[in-house]
Picture 1: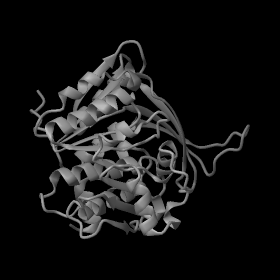
Picture 2: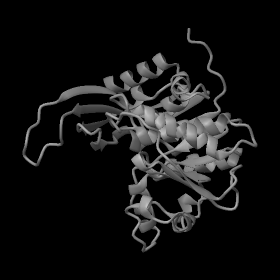
Picture 3: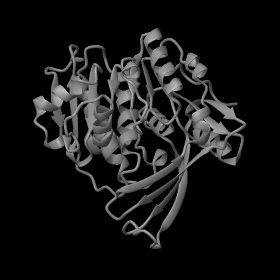
Picture 4: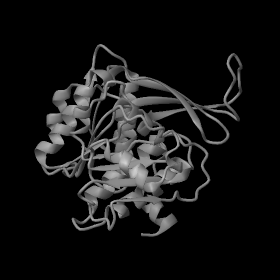
Length: 323
């Protein structure tokens, strides 16, 4: 018998995707065939984030959907091997989600995904998020109804309502954003989000925008805290009225120095680790400390091929960077 799971501090409602990854020296041109190496493994933004959070030593539960097929069994087996607490909705009418990923010699990626069973995740499962959870994290690889239900449930139980707006959904609304306490878009998602909100500014290169101006752009989202992940440019943090223990309302943090070979899933590593760090933090702890830890986890995840399997443990992060 499996040992009983501790009560979760982080609950992540989101996607499971079986990743199929090809690694090659460069992206093929249209009509060209390249020779590369193939691997397959667990992924999906929600599941990646849950593994990242779990590996930081924080009790984490994942809520997601899979098909009634062998890939759904694969998902369950991997979660069991990790000791990750999961609530699976089995969807009879759709297969388990799959993706096709191509990674070039510089660690960049191209991704196509069939979200399949994820789009049938019942919004009602959000009610399974227990009281006592400190952080509820969701993304945009399920229906917007399930995203809204997860954020609303977080508000209902007094947890931090955390949205990773990825991949950007063309129908996201200000009303949905208003349910979130914290969002973590990357630079592309941030630009698409502002366009969706009708902001006319060119924000395609946020690392080149003056800090005060970028802070003002973040404030147009209406979300209390915005963290823009900027890859090799680090990240930018913008708070509203509540600075979450930080000594200033906005700031940048540089990236950690690593040898990246596969950046797929780095954003998921960041969001999952940030959720874990915030759930574990003391009430008066600076938000900045949690972001620094998330930066480190995301950086280390790029040193391995894969997504969920590439998430470093807390012990590995501390061995590299200290406490």
